[in-house]
Image 1 (spheres, rainbow, N blue to C red):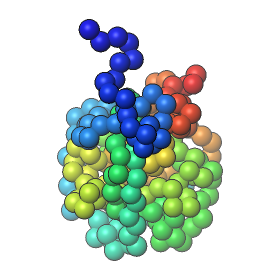
Image 2 (image 1 turned 90 degrees about the horizontal axis):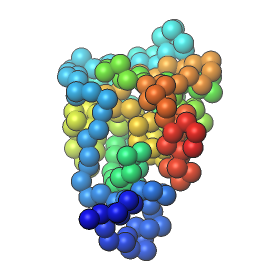
Image 3 (image 1 turned 90 degrees about the vertical axis):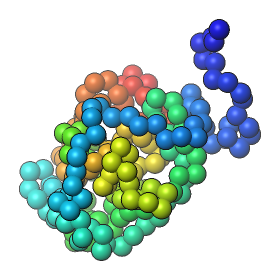
Length: 201
């Protein structure tokens, strides 16, 4: 019989150092979403940046793939308590996206918006300085649909619900607007190391 909080063998010293509070290491890559995986045809995929309702920049898949590429290696952490170590992602950093659009961030806040009508808020400061990208590849291969392909936001230092799957754009907002899960009780920021899972954490 398992008691509350039982998670099996103790992690080794390296794993324990890398695990935020309440997390456990997984060797697979769990698939979680608010609903079914949407069909997003890569040939028709576009990525756009908006300032409120106003479009600022937009790229086709071919144009997006021609932007400067970035690789990130590290650990990711899901609010459902799993962590996956040593992941490798490739995509376009948010810094390079704004550079390609020829703009500086017009507000301190934005919503990442997805093809399945999912959105999530992220402070702009948590996306710049090499902290985040729009990822198109995982582990050297194009991102699989169940993991958000053809592209997802990657904000690895926050809980993974902030790394919106099937992303279609970023919309800068005048204030910090709650997204899909934030409206349903999840934390507005979501720092794994501070265990910011829910709004009262």
